[in-house]
Length: 272
Image (cartoon, rainbow, N blue to C red; front, side):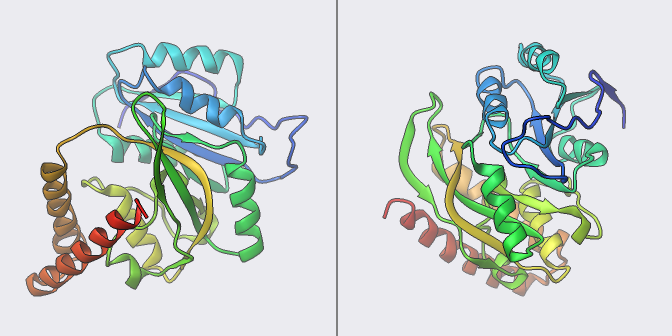
């Protein structure tokens, strides 16, 4: 695996953090041709009330101005680190590249077109400290491609066990924070729905993910063919059950039926 480090990945501790902490948070952001949104994404991290973080942006051979935009931010704030892949690798490998060099105790995930609200890290780390959980997530809202807020909300469930997670994925990737000291290994399997497969691996180790029912992030959505994307998503979930978890054919069929039921309920609840 070849990478080019374009900025020095030193741990920089701010002098005037609003929230004092000795724990570093590593923000993992894969990027490919995100010139329209990456500025807003980075600004949402820069605006965090909790300032002891590093942001590792892995550029997966972008052909637009994404890299130049990030370099401008990195020149002004040395908590922002840039890694560039020599060859296209996909989102799972780009995240794993960042995970390999992350220095923080806590790992937070944020895609290059999503945003956080300013108190995201502060509130969620307080929540993790108060509950002692190893993996947390939160509620999140939605914005369109132009950044306009949509009347939709994904509410965080209070507790998600491995058994519950097998039914569907209620954990929004852009809201996740993981205490890596509590897990044997954190990596993204190089398969579609890699985040879902990763949460399954982590919770299978015996942990319960805890949800904070506060809207702390905004997920950007685009107009797509709903029918085709849902069919494709089901095929990816089947692959996770069948090949990644090695479930029997019959067990996979049962799980897919349950998965469909839970996701129909989730889709309806977004608009209630």
